[in-house]
Image 1: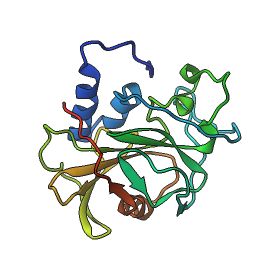
Image 2: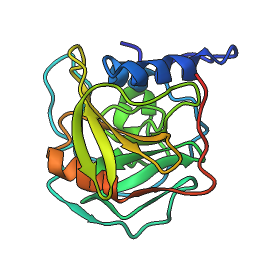
Image 3: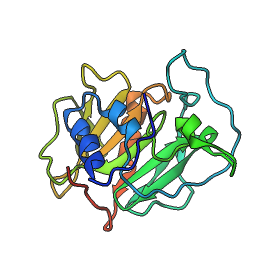
Length: 208
């Protein structure tokens, strides 16, 4: 699978990605291919990563716990906690991507050879965004309490890559948090992480 799409002058990429999120089925397969944002990432750290079966993208070593986030807050959202050793790899007003320390690389890193080091890829990461403007409500899933808000944890029957946590906001729209499988967070930790993600005034919804 090509994780690095060619240019998309027609603007179809965001529609494909968000449509996949809406059905909750192949969301992660599509999200790994497409990210429709202008990200700016950074960070430093060791370059080790877990071994994966042949034919599968590299995924970070399992995270074990959440810790207080002490870095610079993203543009459209703020964070209370992150998995230990993770950092904000990319952000803009409509989304953020969190990655393990092993995703950080120097100036000679070629992101096309490792999706972990590509800020456009969601493989092995956590992605945060708002529900698209043309989506209504949340799909069926496991009802969870996310802080003082209602949430739904969605895992489509044909989705083998991860789960999406939908968190209802006071405005009626939903905050979406994608967790790639294999990053080592329990369901309770996913919900705890979601409770610590706050939508700021400048956050923007996509369309399509």
